[in-house]
Length: 334
Ligand SMILES: *Cc1c(COP(=O)(O)O)cnc(C)c1O
Image (cartoon, rainbow, N blue to C red; front, top):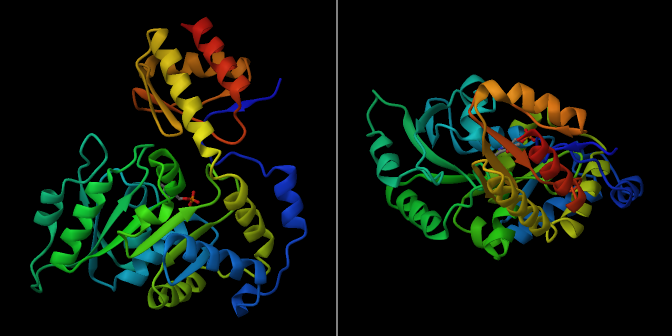
């Protein structure tokens, strides 16, 4: 029985064709800028997203951290969602390592940061205050796609108030595929964008940060300082390149499967909602352990926690049969 791992879209294994591309990668020392495959990946992502330059990083956490460090100086501040990955799930790196103060803002139900609240959080220029330097958004956020007119309004606010605008676009391609637009239509509102290649796109390792040439130069320095200067990283970049060539359009399958799973669970009487490749199901915390072990016995792996909602994530290694098995197991449990 093939296990079905619904914890995250980070759990994918490289496909045989991807491994083959990795095996054949042309490599060099990327700290010297001599890895042809890394250079090609960086060029490609920069061009595809409409930026001057891009930088390959070992993780999305590091891409966001060095972006913040490249935008901000010590004593600056970034405005960010209270439940944003950059703020909540990256160990406080911007503050810990960058001396950058976060200014968290509560999210609206759709995941956006209300722009009047963002504007009220911008500090006056006065020695009492940290210098508000950038706004950091996330798209998708918990699977939700940020509305295009919201992104345009956020850009206008940042222009008016002299802030930079960074996107944690770990799942930028999910947002683009779900909206049926090219990723650059979303990226164009931002000064810098990070993209994870190791989530739904299915590469084993790596993210890319894109921005202006100046910003990427500064980020490259911080990447080295943070220990992210990798040597023959083309082995990894080849997997990432393969993912961009072959695994973007298929994100639509993940979204379709999430939507099927949510409606079938809802038909069983479970409150379930799909957003791009994620399904959220309300399950009382005290029933979650029983559900987890019941599904586990049937080869279905989920994460549970302290919230009354569980998240089921579709990805490259979950097919239609996996969705059907999941629905059957939930039906039997219910
Ligand atoms: C996974 C994720 C990251 C960080 O990526 P890692 O490669 O796990 O460090 C950043 N932002 C969001 C929204 C993510 O989901």
